[in-house]
Length: 162
Image (tube, rainbow, N blue to C red; front, side, top):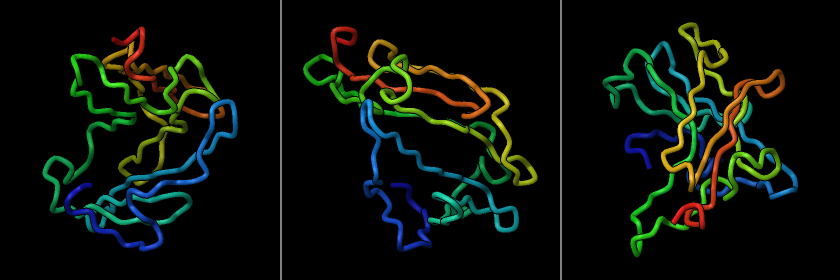
């Protein structure tokens, strides 16, 4: 979906489903994604799992990211055109609110950034934001197992979210 992305691995289908998938009150499955800047050529690489390079965004595509990023955002997004004057019923994440926690709500964990020396370091600060907290919400935290993490999601249109 991003113009200019150069896929270098034909074993990964961009936009395809990833399996296995987590289930409510059932097994929970993680994937690992890493985006980093090649210091020699300036390209931004996408890595999946343990060292599987998927492809890169060439350096010439960027103006503000030519040297480094100043902000990283993680999360979910839906499109709300307010069909019929109501909020969309599109769920985010698992469709369950963050407060339901592990096994129910969706999550990101072990959030890290790449420093100037291309080392992974913990986030210097994690700020959470939900534009429509009655429809979708988020709760962040940090612990010794998951590092910085957040739970997020919601059902969309509901009694709480007309």
